[in-house]
Length: 329
Image 1 (cartoon, rainbow, N blue to C red):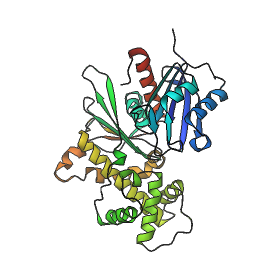
Image 2: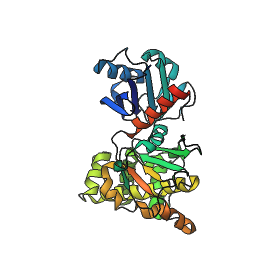
Image 3: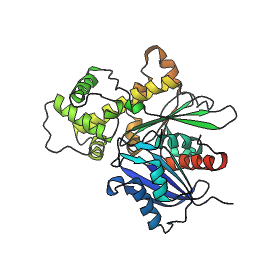
Image 4: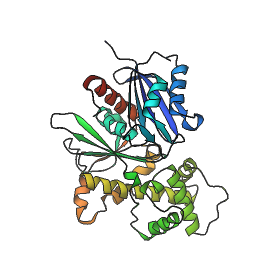
């Protein structure tokens, strides 16, 4: 008996993305909604099903969320919905089988299913060792991370992480100044404070403060990247350059923690949009800047994920595993 079609989602802090999986890893009716336009997660799920004419017709669904999934109560720091109940959402949406998983858990599970054409390499002298851990990381509304480990029998298992909440590691005087500027506003300066869309704005604000520049209107993250990568605005360009360097340090810290010789994979909503600029930035040199451990980091291959909806692939794999094996890998 078929379990298709299935509802697959990738829900971030800004946008909620939905698609109908009609066959394994084949999607139709993909739609994107602004989270702020809905009072609750269940509301946007129901709206999506109504728009595609599938209300009451879908039995199986996966919701990938920008938060740890620990117990029934879900708390999403970067979402306008903040808190909700898994059991209540199940009741409101009416699915027979509904799984919740962290969105970067889904991103990690997507890696084995992404074609080579959707992976752009950024350095590394060796090929990925698929028996070793893989790191998946990326800035968007927040900073997402997860790791992927291959069992000796072949199945991959993903481990969602919240390393974006770890304390930001300043490595030079400029970053110490920026850290100090931000610390006056927030008691804890996490990596995500800088490595996110709002983080780009904080870097820009901090540079204006350091250089004595007044701000009439704070540019959006998109405006900072657009002006920065074409050199229209010096402060925007510096913001993007610092952002890339900071990402190199944070990604490197996690990579050495995990020994990610299976490769480092960068996703999220920012880096793929500035791919050419990012490739030529100081990200890679900062990633390798680990003193005596540098020869190991030089080997690690890094890829930018250019697939439009990679988390769909991972959410599909998670849901299929749940339906056929009874667990989420």
